[in-house]
Image: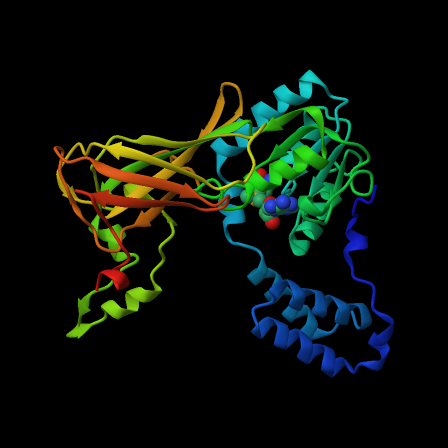
Length: 369
Ligand SMILES: C[S@@+](CC[C@H](N)C(=O)[O-])C[C@H]1O[C@@H](n2cnc3c(N)ncnc32)[C@H](O)[C@@H]1O
């Protein structure tokens, strides 16, 4: 099995490197950074540091590229105590059931869940992390915390891992937290399906085990304004809405003036023991509980880590995930007597809603113009 130690993550300098001038290497790093290829830029600067470990521009450039490549939400997520505590309880329970089982942590980040498994008594944990600059740091955190005997780090996407090259044998426990505010955005369905097929024993424990997505109709002009513009300062800026997103973005419902126009409604249930990333569609008749302007659909998840241990980003819970908000380009009026037809679809990675009121489908603003 090839697990990674910190020193392994320093890229070897290619044979051709000696023929390139340092200035050309630095220009390469700058170009990659400018193109937004931050992981590649970080690698380029790392190669330069392999040639000249004190090179000032490479040191600065490397740090700058890594910080652009690594999402800022990692820290907020790590400070989400409810998330950490619930995973810790669930992991302790799963590991206690069989400490000899090999544990696979997919999407290790700082290594938190892998170290929780080792602390709970797991003899061997493999933590994989697909973003190279994060994986390098996972290995460092694990070593500094003194868990490097039990936890090996693989710098790879799980979907590129295989047994026995990256895992000594199939794992008996999977722990993973690769979910965004809309649940599916980090590819949890496809990733777990791949793991079930290639990396886990047939009777492996999978954490999380299941999840549900819940939606609510909402009136909220401030949320609508986050994605739409009209006449302002004497100009009609509405054509700019061609660039507004038709998918969800994350925001905190309770930080924006809003009114619920329906009860929360479950739309999709997922069983991570059986489901794959195949697209799904569901249609519902929703009876509004109040009259108002339907600006947005707010949705969130309930995710069962193990039976009885459930994590949610429902409004008002203070979870770092916030809620997923899909704003309707042209908000229709709804009233209690008139059911709203809600079509929910997902393509394995993104949930989207379509809305019809009084038999009229709400189309994108551009098409409606
Ligand atoms: C939301 S963070 C969770 C980090 C850590 N497990 C925790 O709970 O604190 C997800 C991490 O998974 C990584 N990731 C996502 N999908 C992955 C996959 N299929 N294989 C390896 N890493 C993945 C991302 O790069 C990111 O660092």
